[in-house]
Amino acid sequence: MESDSIRFNMTTMRPVSAFTDRPYRQELEIISSILHPIWPGILLAGLCSNLLNIIVFIKSGVKDGVTTLLLALSISDAVFLSLFSATIVPFSFSPLGAQRIPTVWTMYFLFFWPASTVYDFSSHIAVFLGITRCACVSMPLRFKSVFTKKRTIFALIGLFCADILLHSPMLTVFRLGWVKDPLTNTTSLGLVRDSPSVHSTKQRINDTLNKNTIPWISFITMVTCVALLTYKLYESSKVRSQPSNARSSEESSSKSADTKPTQSHKLSPKDLKVVQSVVLVVTIFIVAQLPSLTYTAVRVANSEFNGRGRLAFLASMCIKIGFTFDMLNASVNIFVYYNYNSKYRSVFRSLLRLK
Image (cartoon, rainbow, N blue to C red):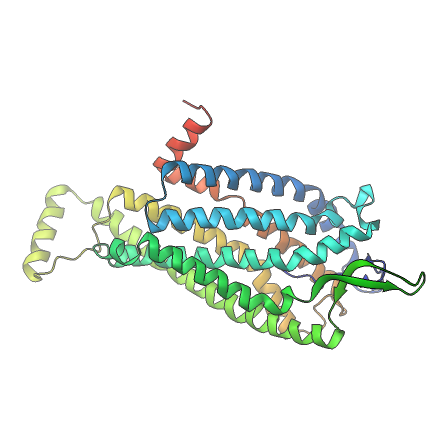
C-alpha cells in the first residue's frame, strides 16, 4: 500500500492538478474509470464475508492453533477493510463531489497508515499460517503439542506489537491538532503533519523496512511454503493412489529398513483438505502481493517512478491496481474455507438456514 501518488494543498486538503505533461495520463484515467466504481462493491463484499467468517469460526469452536490463526486473519482483514474505506471515498465518490470536501482528505490521511499497518499484520498472519502448515506435514506427531492455541495467541500478540513498532514512524506523520488559518487569524482542529525533512526521513525508514526488506522476506517464505506443501500433497496423493497391497508391501519394507516409521506419507484426508486450503490462502496472498512488490522494487531502481517524478501517472496506476488486489486479498478467503473445510461449510450452511 502506498500514499505518495497524489499531491495535496495542505491548507485546503485538495489534490493539486499537476504533472499534466507527464506520460501515461490517459492510461491512468482509463484504469481509474474502471477501478473506482468497483471499489465500494469489493469493500462491502469483503466486510460481509469476513463478518461471516468470524461468526462461523466462533460458532464452530476455536480449539486449536490453526483455527485461531484463521479467526485472527478474518478479524484483521475486517479491520483493514473498515479503515481502508476512508481511503477509497475521495476516488470512488468523486462524481458526487467527495474530492472537494476537505474533511474527506483529512480522513484519508488519518486512516491510511493504520489501514496499511493492519494489512501488513494480516500478511504476517498468512505467513505464520503457511509456516505452521509446513510444520504440520513435517512433524505431524509433535505439531499439536508445539503449536498450541495458547502459544499461537502469544505469537499473534507479538506479531501485532512488532507491526505497530515497525509502522510507528508513518503512524505519527499525520495527526489531529490545532491549526491556525492565516487568512482569518482563527484556530481550529485540523490535520497536522511533520515537516518535509522529518516526513522524508520516516518515509525512507518505512520504504526500507516495510516496503522492501520485510515484504520480500515474507514473499520468499510463502513461496517456499507453497512449494513444500504442494510437494507433500503430490507425495501423499501418489502414495494414496497406489493399490492397497502394493502400499502395504512398501510400508512393510520401509519399516524393516528403518525402526522409525516415516510420517511423510501419512496425511489423513482431513489433513489433506486443510493443507489444500492453506495452499490456496497462501497462493492468494502471493498473487495479491505481486503488484505492491513490483512497484516498490521499480521505485527503488528508478527515482522517477513515484508520486512526484516523471512517471507519476504510471506509479499512480500501479498503486491503484495494488489497492484493488489488497481489497480482494482481504475478501476472497471465504470461498476457500467453504470449499475445503467441511466443518466451516456445515456451520455456514446452518447459519444461513441452507440445506
